Length: 163
Image (cartoon, rainbow, N blue to C red; front, top):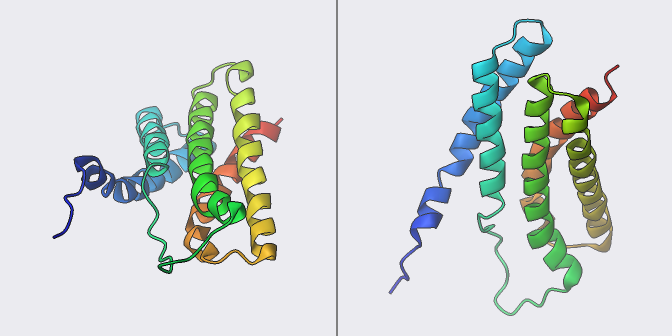
């Protein structure tokens, strides 16, 4: 008999769809913002939704097909379980910092967020490279997360180093 799933897991199953919708809306709003046509309500809604969806994605269990009696060491645990959670929370912080930047608030309100989340994302990229070099299995299951983290990192770097 199958064990019943938590209602939270059922709700979290809709988070990836919400993330895609907010990602498209945020890209559109940021493109409008960079061209000089600010769309503040769309920008605020999409970035807040994207930040919340990134934060909630950190709590979705990953479906990695482990073998039945497979023993994993710390680098496997860190790479496949802990690092994705840290990166998603770091991306949520970065998106909120991008929102604060785009609202025109003073730099001291968001620069520390940029630095903290930037170090989190870059550090996790380095962990993935080390894990890949050590031969961690199932690393392909977490690569889509880094495809999401790279654009956030690039936008954040552009806004941080913009004159």
